[in-house]
Length: 151
Image (cartoon, rainbow, N blue to C red; front, side):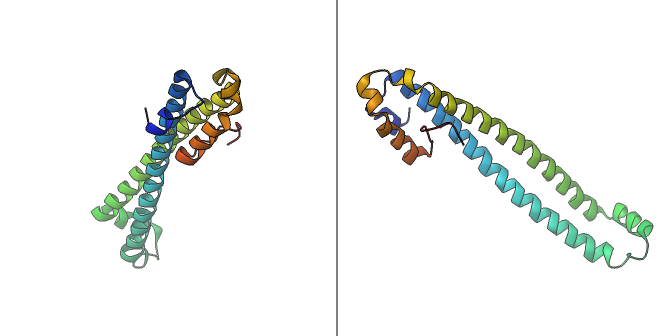
């Protein structure tokens, strides 16, 4: 369990474990989001390189006929490699987006459950009155908003 969660004053051990699970899911979501953004940038770079290569080597010289452009592009190994890289990177980017969306859904479901069940999790009177201190720590440390269920 992470140190700031262990040091929460107005939270019992069960609730700390639930908050730790929320933190882990938030980290998974953030990591997936970061990785997806890197692959978006990489895919864009490779796509621009491919389009530039295609334009310089094939587009300019064989623009008079679609059939000649097609036959030269199919026979050029570098063109096919760049095209395959672009397509594969685009596919991997979409797989990462699906993973990111799955992690985001899991994180928000658990976070909303904590928000909805906050009366059950902070049962005692002193816990309920001072829960905002724990919420503030979670917000500042992990950027997890437990005040309301909206995104």
